Length: 388
Image (cartoon, rainbow, N blue to C red):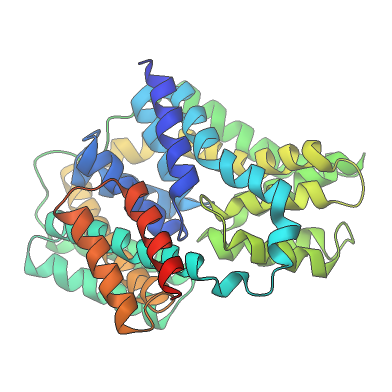
């Protein structure tokens, strides 16, 4: 099978089945590409996740694009993004109003089953990554300290600061490993410079061009939201509300309705941009608006991923910086642990039955090597039949 087609089909399936938000997505990717397909090892995957955490934009989508770039170069990057984003974007454009009008959607049994499945997926990824990335007492302590910071200071800047401190502590206290803990992704310096130049040209040029017509104003609003948000996911929602509700492009009620519908969708929450683009009062709207807003909000992530990778990759080749990356990887485990505790666990486990279903799902993933999509479907079906 052609590698680009392979990347597209794998991520299309993940885009249809990866419920639970960005942390759960990282768990799904780990199961698919580290455990099952062995595209890369634990340390390389941890390095890619750590890199994505430092960039603004949707971290799980950046991991997906990085995996596509690694597997099939730039065409693979685009294929991974389209495959992972397309299902939720289409669903948001078509069904957001219908989903949001159901007052019981957030408490539906099948949806609760999907949240329980996310607990099992994240637990399996956390277990596997912790064994490799925190093999000794100093890194375990660093991971626990990072988890405490993330739990008690739940902000994107606190998470970035924790990763930076993890890198400093790794540089000062840990022994560097024998090889860079990074995936084999090749980006030329010329291509990286071109991507960074385009990123900044659009960031500072679009506000000027936005005065010419409404389409450019919309492009500017969504591009800046994607370029300036750290933490991704829910963090981008206040920026988007400021961008589209305040100027009167969409009313507050349909904005909140779309946000409610997004919680029931698989794939990245940034697909909310497709809903907003389709619901704009003035042209571009409909399918054209959905496509424009979706591309605009993701374009900064694509450009930064390509532009920053050679610097990150070169840094990983120096012994002292490899030690720093080991600290960053340990901090990534801590962030995953914190997210597993809240909101993954607290948002899904409310009864002994919930716990037992999550435990069964985890055992299927961990010991039976069951495919994640089957576990997700089984949890939704079990919860729906039992009326959880």
